Length: 147
Image 1: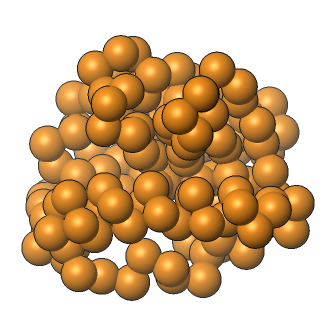
Image 2: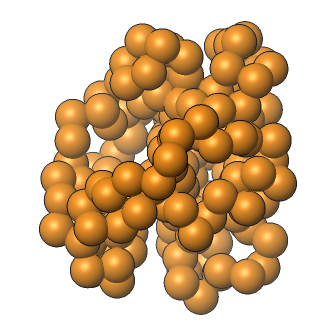
């Protein structure tokens, strides 16, 4: 498995296609959620890719402070279906948090979690700071990791 970190302008057309395909396959098709997956934030993001022999296995989008929240945020955390349950999501979160702490030195890291994943993000130090709310037909909560 190979991990890479890219700003949007560094991505190849192939990488953008694979990133968007995985995000749409899971967030729109698998979760049956019609929403604007291509939301304009990708241009400002750092994109973390984990690839294996089958292609893109894991992905996350990191946004610097001031783009979506006052602090930096982690979003679009995704694992290809046949790699779920392998621990890859925990490695992805560790790498995401480590990158932000090392390069952006924040006070807090924000994320918007699907409600059923609160425990997963809690394992990485995030705490819910909102009540559950509907986003695209899926219950979500806002979470923060205080550094």
